[in-house]
Every structure is written in C-alpha cells, then in structure tokens.
Image (cartoon, rainbow, N blue to C red):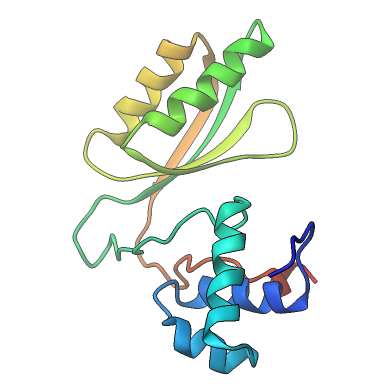
Length: 157
C-alpha cells in the first residue's frame, strides 16, 4: 500500500466496523468494505501503526458481575498546572478508576470506578498528585442501558 498521510472513507468504515466488533475477522472486514483480505489487513495494520486504533478490549457487564460500578463527578483545585497534569497521570495508573474524562472548564472530571475501595482511591489519587478536591458526588450505576462499545466515527458527523 502506498504511504498514506490521512484516513479516507475506507479507513473510516474499517474503524466503525472495529468499534462495533473489535474481534471481527479480517475476511469479514474485507467482505464488508469490498477490499481484498490483504488490503484490509494492510489498512488495519496502518491504522494501528499510526496510533489511530490503539487496541482491542473486552467490555464487562459490571452490574451483572456484581461489581460496585460508580460514576463520580469531581472538581479539583491546584496551585500549579503541573499538579493537574500529575493528577491525570496518577488517574491513568489507578486500577480502581476504569475511565476518566476531563470536562470543559476548570478542574472538572467524570470518573468511573469499581470496587469497594474506589472512592478511597480517588482521594488517594488527589493527595498523591497535590490537588485539592473542591467538590465530589458519586452515584452507583443501577443498570447499564447502553454500554460503551467504541464510538464509530459516523457518530461525529
């Protein structure tokens, strides 16, 4: 395949298919895109090599497994911008925090976590990174109505 610099419509279709089912076989990717199997494999390899597709994962049903799955909104305050960056680095390393999003604004995050010690871990992360928690609210998830499966690019159109 010639060297590419940006994604095209076939790449977007491959990304959408992989977001729906990251275990889709190369033969099915080829059939759904109209590419040969070798061309589909080469494009997927390029998407992975460029850091566009970062990996594949299993999505677990936390409620079905009896996990204490929670969403937490947190507002932090820091004296230095480096502390906020440190907070984000420590969040990335904390196994109890399943996912984290920084919201538009100053110091607002939404975290998702599991396990009995999840909230304690959130406070440890803040302490370790040198930030202060100004506000925090957390709710247990009763029912996962639409689990995250990956976001197809078409969702952004």
